[in-house]
Image 1 (cartoon, rainbow, N blue to C red):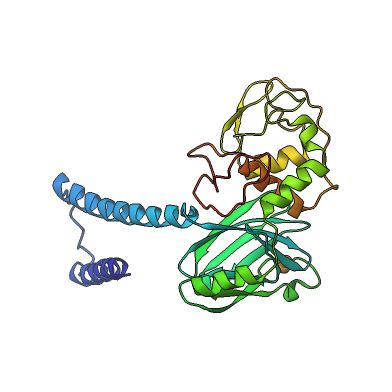
Image 2: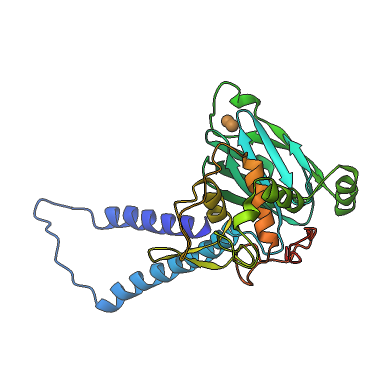
Length: 306
Ligand code: CUA
């Protein structure tokens, strides 16, 4: 603002001053052609260039910081559907139209929709992010003050769009621990492990790689070689796609034998399976490789890294 005001006043002041000072005084008054030195040209080009580059660098660093969740962020899965918000904690707590979070800790939301586009909007946190069917979007925030904050859907999604609202309860870390302890849970990883057996995934995806499908141990966060060339980074979106559209990206050395689970399992189930796959080991430096230490190790799984 200060820089803009300074230059606005300078430029408009100069325009008015010159308009009066060098006005045409008679019919015969013809302007003389003037050639200024190149030094002046360079000075008034280089100074604004320098100023705009400083602003660009400053703005870009804030933008990058804002668009990447810090590594120590706790993770919450969000599923939007007409017309409610379903939220899942890593520890297994499920909430509808309510989200309990601790203050002073970054919270990362991994979000998808069961039907149409919604938008997760918490005005007090300056947070708004579209929630899109068929893919994961991410946003993060850190609550600084305990309290009760409005949650809205900010994308028109049908008849009860205006009723797709809820509350975020930001609590002191102690209160949050008490809340976690007081609500029933089975962790996402445990639910995922059970599902992995119930759906018979384990028949093909054997840990030692001897099955018809690749072993999933250590897959999350790694770079996977695909049949027909190319690679893909094994993040949440890739695991989700491999469950719902297995033929889209087939791992090198395997046949596209896997059936789709589209329509057979819910978005919550997909999230449970993803967390189970994550619990089978994470390559260092991969997405979600940060220490979180909440997941309970499951029988048959390597100790969780997150
Ligand atoms: Cu969901 Cu509007």
